[in-house]
Image 1 (cartoon, rainbow, N blue to C red):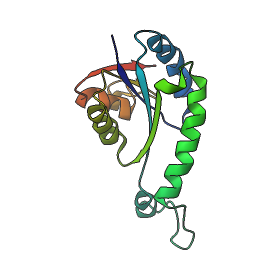
Image 2 (cartoon, rainbow, N blue to C red):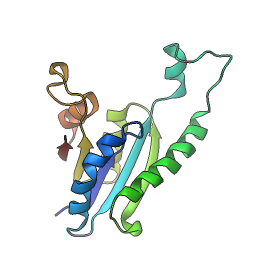
Image 3 (spheres, one colour):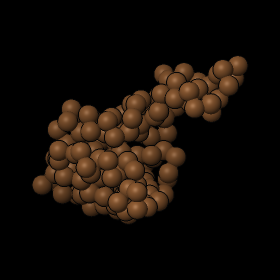
Image 4 (cartoon, rainbow, N blue to C red):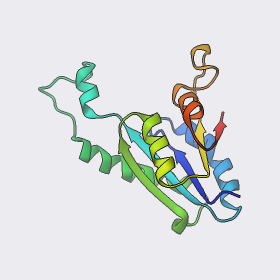
Length: 145
């Protein structure tokens, strides 16, 4: 049914990942799909622009942050019961919706599986990223709540 599944992971929200685990484990048993895990980081420039860090106290570079996040993402994939040859991990920098949708097209994803958090009326009862992905995706999206 699904050959390529994209699963965006918010490394700061482990609860969302835990909600997704049983769904991905079930889907991985059907047709042995390749599961692509993606973590998206905001550019460091965004932290400086919003005053979240002072220039005299520099944070790690984007390259360093990608390496740290990739190591963390690989740890997170251990929560899933998927053969290692079917797991693909990547970390990208940019706006989450854009990076998720771009990678979905690049890998020809059959399905996106996203977790949703803290919904409110302004996001039509989905989290901001989940809502945006659902709205603009060109493929099926499974939203896990």
